[in-house]
Image (tube, rainbow, N blue to C red; front, side, top):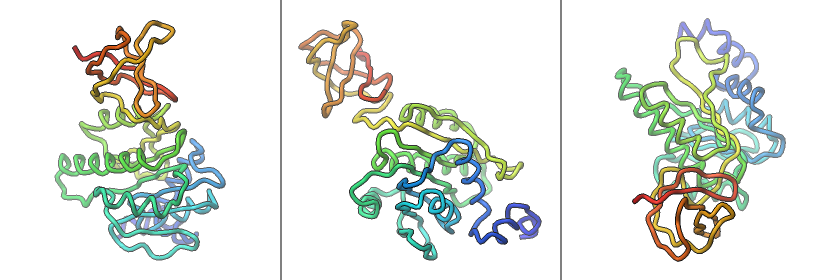
Length: 254
């Protein structure tokens, strides 16, 4: 507690009525990337004690939903859910809370319980971040934004690549409010690519047409996939190599 009592952002949060110093991290990230805009619907994963929920509500003035394993003290006009974001059942609770419309922004400042074993703590952080990305993939609108905290380590670049495969742009960022000694890093994804396939996925496809460049064209739920070198009428196993707004590309695995 002694360190916190001397911390500038800790004192600032107490003075300004925020529940956690992390509120300023979200403010700073939003100033740089403009993730949350007025009227946006925001989902906050791992939301306790509620500092990010407070900021999200101030920024959006719209629907804000928070989820955490522990009870979150009420915030005016904010819906909170006590649930585990790593289990499939929570997704239905989230969708019910969001209503008919998808979320514009999904944010996650969750961290695992620290064991003191850095390799284990990093792995747990990546697992949490992957759960957050999976939820975002189910509830984000096309073009939506994603913000997640991850501990740096050997799997960081791999996870960043996973986010890049789902968004037009994705980058790592460290806001000024993060402690200098902290190994935390934030990943910002913008321009969600809502598609029934993901980069690296292998899927059996029937080629039903030809594109202008001569590549084969397949469809999954109406979503076009251009397959290099494939001929119309073929059915083959395809690895997805890129996902873009409205279409994906792939190549035969054999």
